[in-house]
Image (cartoon, rainbow, N blue to C red; front, side, top):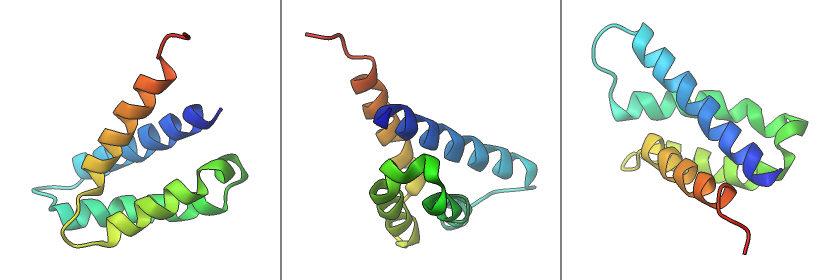
Length: 91
């Protein structure tokens, strides 16, 4: 359940980002991408479905608000790691 929610959160955030960037004309800077993701993730803190992801969302918001960080790359890395753990064979 934890990794399901984490994967869903990452997929939803990245899809929202990519559709928003695609609908904009021209180049979208990393700062603007971070702002789009922060704006998307902030309401997720209050949703009951993401109660187990509250700390992760807060960390994502902190990363997104830093000027030298790229939240998009962090989400891709989190998604990759969560997917690897989720699909790992049982030992």
